[in-house]
Amino acid sequence: MDTFKQGNLEDQSVVSRMQKKYWKTKQVLIKVTGKKEDEHVVASDAELDAKIEVFQSIQVTCTDLLKTIEKYQQRLNDLSEQENELGLFLKLQADQGEAQIDKMTDATGQALCSSSQQRLALGTALSRLGQELATFSRRAVSDTLLTINRMEQARTEYRGALLWMKDASQELDPDTCKQMETFRKV
Image (cartoon, rainbow, N blue to C red):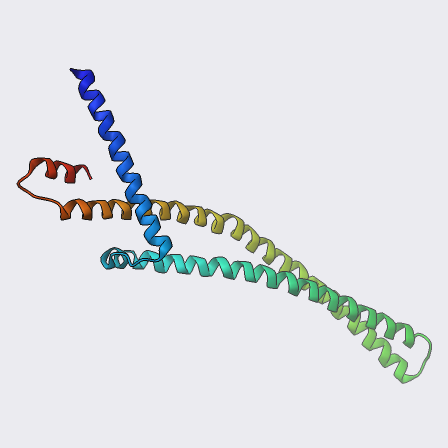
C-alpha cells in the first residue's frame, strides 16, 4: 500500500513539475513577444526595474569611461612626446648662438621639456584610475550582472507561478474539495 502512495506522489510531482515548466515557458513567451503582463505584477516590480536601469547605466558608463581614459592616456602621451621634441629642438637651436633671442629660445625649450615631463606624470595617476575602474567593472559589475540574471530567472518562475495561480483560481469552486486542493498545490 505504501508503494502505491509513493508511486502516486511521484506521478503528482512529475505532473507538478510539468505544469510548473509549462507556466514558466508561457511567462517567457509573454516576455519575449512583448505581450502585456498583469499591471499589478509589473507595478510591484517598478522599484526593482528602476534599480536595474541604474545598474545598466553604471555598466555602460564604466565601459565608456574606460574607453575615454584609454584614449586620453594615448593622446596625453602623444602630446607629451611632441612637446618634448619641440623643447629639445628649441634648446638645440639656442645652443648655436649667444644672442638674447637664443637665451629666450633655450628657456622656452626647457619649459616645454619640463611641461612634457609633468604631463607624463599625469599619465601615472590616470593609469591608476583606469586600473581601479577596470577592477570595479570586472568584479562588482560582473558579479551584479550574474545576480541580476539569477534574479530574472527567479522572477520569470515567480510570474509563471502567478499565471498558474490565476488560471487555477478562475476555475476554483470553493465547494469542491479537489479544486481547493489543486489551488493549494499551485
